[in-house]
Image 1 (cartoon, rainbow, N blue to C red):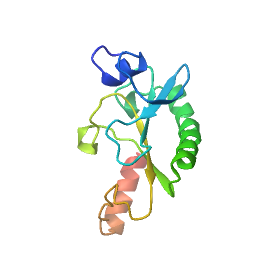
Image 2 (image 1 turned 90 degrees about the vertical axis):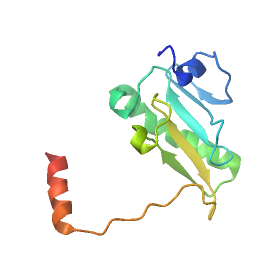
Image 3 (image 1 turned 135 degrees about the horizontal axis):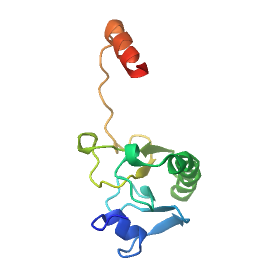
Image 4 (image 1 turned 120 degrees about the horizontal axis):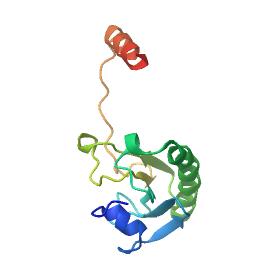
Amino acid sequence: MSENCIFCKIAKGEIPSHKVYEDEDFLAFLDIAPASLGHTLIIPKRHADNLYALDAVSAARLIPLAQKLAEKVKTATGCAGVNLLQNNGEAAGQTVHHFHMHIIPRMAGDGVLPVWASLAHDAEAFAALAEKVRG
């Protein structure tokens, strides 16, 4: 746990939260500044700054847990769908440097998340980038 991390403090019970799930490794709670009603955060109790610092065992357990909780949030809110969102680094919108995944309930036309403009497809540039990523 990190001493000054707000999510570590929530995991330790030092800061109250509206918990929706807890086990020995993870905690899920309602976001206090939600994009929509039911916006839920999943955090590992063990501090990891971001996805790159998350251990492989926690990473492997995360998606099945997110799937289970997303279904529960969908049922509880009556939403039409959910977004799973996870940001890494300030440029990507990460504001709390403790790994967390958002479950955001969505309704058609709610305008909750902006839709990004797509880049024009450049087959040569895409092929070069794909080669670099495969590296």
